[in-house]
Length: 351
Ligand SMILES: *Cc1c(COP(=O)(O)O)cnc(C)c1O
Image (cartoon, rainbow, N blue to C red; front, top):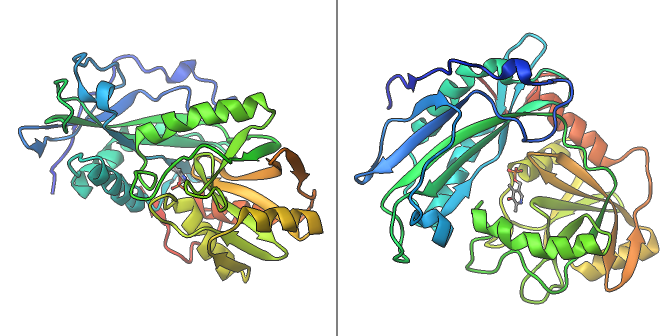
């Protein structure tokens, strides 16, 4: 176990410069950050320090070989100013699953959890209270060790930075079902939150945007016949009254929002099918009217409804409905996250 974490406080807080009523997503940063170095074969004591730039040698391996992984999570403040996290140990465990795949040394769980708690304690005034707002938390690890040799670095940095954020509203999202590019492959790193995975998505997403879509629906790399993820979110499709999502694999990331939605929907008596989903099946359902909803699921947006999709040059609109699973489940999950509803699952974590 780690002992008390050293805290070096900023001399000039930026909090009064922030308009907490008009927050965007992830664009202003709180006063402090957690920093923990890996050197001489072990993780050193984490410490909280003022948010500031980092100096790296130009040969640091992160720049050349992309050895980096990250997480995304949120802290919420309830009406009584209690601070809550949502399944934080799952983020900690997943960071290590990602690290292992990228040959990054795994971090002791208490460094992550105690470091996070110490950071949030110092910056708790940065956690917004307004409905829909939260403190977005970005833990990440990267190779700071030096040298052009293509091998794992001998030094790493683990940081946690936070950003007070407003609700992530994406509007009417039209998506393009991808027929050429892939996000991930069997045996690859798609299940990890590895920085390079997202760089690889930018170009195909730019092409989709030029065609008038906001996001790409990733299909399997081999045949492009199965629906896998929606941008950097997991995807759910509702056909008649059944909610369908693909099974996690080398290619599909094990999202905490995804698994929470599956459990919550089942508990609410909604039929959930975790199985491979053919593009053909979704196109057919759109044609015969049994396709009711599609939505992305992830920490940032929680649930992001899809208004229509393009596939092989045809556009398909989804019906506009009042009672959607998307709205219902989003409210259920955010009520649990923000301590507005009972948490029968034990997901909420009080700071
Ligand atoms: C982070 C991520 C998700 C969502 O995971 P959550 O734990 O729900 O935030 C889904 N797909 C990809 C590719 C991701 O990177």
